[in-house]
Length: 398
Image 1 (cartoon, rainbow, N blue to C red):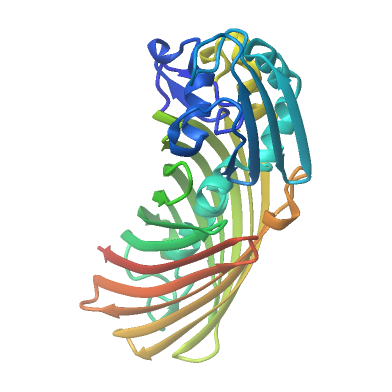
Image 2 (cartoon, helix red, strand yellow):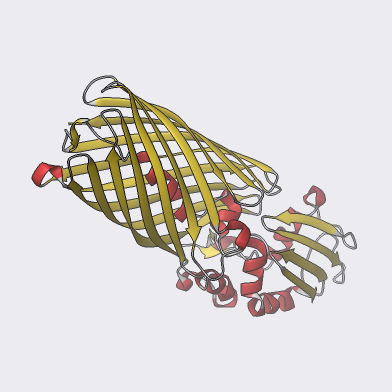
């Protein structure tokens, strides 16, 4: 996803995120930006324009001083205001002065528009929260076969999961799909260890003022160690994370993206109350850092990557509680889970640092090697964001 492209100069609209081809960078980029944000996509000198950009509101009026109508360049001036997340910025001047002002106020612009998480402002959750949701959705935390406690009956598992996502982000409807492919290879005494990889992905179309689209894929290799007791299981997981994010909108039609990388661990304990019912509890930790290679950014636009790369890593702690009930032994089961993703990071906006997720999944085993599931997931707490998904998954083991 990361291409040999330069960043588009968008001081109020995703400028920290997107690459464009060098040929597309021109002196009139500011003109294109303000045209896209103006009513009717037309710059009208002397007319105040207003736009909602993710977590911020933008207001501006352009004054024609160069004798060319419907442009923004040369001696033209702009009176600009950006307000959001407790930040209130104002500017009045020419295009060159606007570039210098943006350099001086890069961190404040980032906070006003995106808070501490551009991916959350656009897609309704951070990439770290998305990966955590997907990993929890794919991990049953339940016995493979109650007849032999929690010890798995297969040494290779493949899970393919998909879900239809429908959200509302700051009063804008968003729809899309997400899911994952995971492979797990068990080995050791009673298959008490495993290595594998999980590949979660997500795509979202947002019906906002700039018609944003969001795509993300992550690669998460993992190692698991399990301890089996007569009626219980303790499992510890270690993983690393490499993610790629790509986005587009009407003001960055060439699109672009950024990297994120990190690592995490999770401990889970499950206890079988009887042959049909088990409970589980877990605690996870993850750290994710976002990055844009600065050497891809022209020197005069370096504030863009600087402000993005200055964002603190996303540290998150996730406690969880779950239940597994075997309705028809070895045929039909139900799994319920609630977990809370808490961002432990200094610059997290309080309205977006916590996310509580609840899910319920019914699974049907067609054979002892094939299982299909359907469920529902909903998240809470994020301000002005609702998140609901219908879950489908398919598991094959051998």
